[in-house]
Image (tube, rainbow, N blue to C red):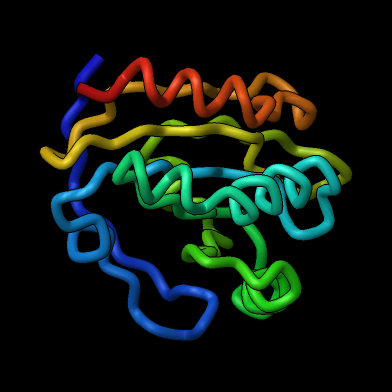
Length: 152
């Protein structure tokens, strides 16, 4: 796969500028696109990743959550889950578009569907899993297995 990406910046849930390349440094990164703080399946996935953050640290992978939530909703979710990784508000879905993350429109609102992108230290997408529906959240054990298969 190895698709090179461009750097992107956003405002994180703490109101600070988030520079993807600076944050990633020489680590791998896992972009976790999710529908929003209202989504129970999404919160469950984020909690499982947060509860097992040491597995990601051992693999040198930095998780980054991204949703179409407002900055306030992203901040509330980050605090509520005591997330140990960034939660980025992508209200205009610019980051989602940059990566080709799937979206859906429901009741006049647009949502980002679950999607995962593994980025190597050379800033290339080496693996992706894009959901077809809001329920396409990868089981945690399957996620870890898939990630390990991509690492050197």
